[in-house]
Image (cartoon, rainbow, N blue to C red; front, top):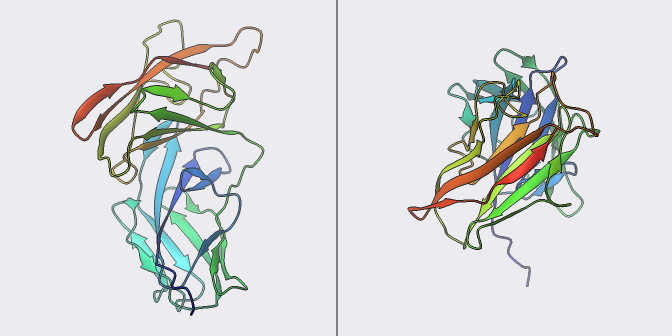
Length: 252
């Protein structure tokens, strides 16, 4: 008897920096999408697109244009309010298309492929346009109230590195108000490595337990002998209960 595969939901998170040319980072399930993300017929695919402008997160309007409308049943997908798109259902068993992202204020910036696999699954080719830059994932276990990053703290970052902050809890937990709060240090020219004036990073509605940030401070730091130190802590509501994380350090 053939095993039935339950349809799944795939949400691709795309971050575009204000560099020239723009740098594009794609994530799936909280991790950089360096390899194709496999989907099957009946699965639902959606996108959430953010623009990182001097470290500030914006969700401008965007449009996805598909080379073959039979793949999702539509030639394009417009998201005039920005943020998370409607989800589209994968229709064919085997197919291959490409799609482009038109981002308001930036234009058409990339053209990845969606391709069928030999097992009748579909490979959705996401893009990490600048693989030479590092991606760091900081995980906050809100149950144990511990915060960790591979290699330990302090975490040393460089210009255009990506930092992902993820809050975890028991399965089924409801997250709200996830923020990363940096200490006020007047000696710094920038408030954080990600923004010159804002001391707080906030999760978007589409990813309430996850924050993406791109290092944008290009005017200070960069000396390994004298790293610039930034101190932060997290705050979040989990099932209506407020939690504050321990303080950790990021060096630039």
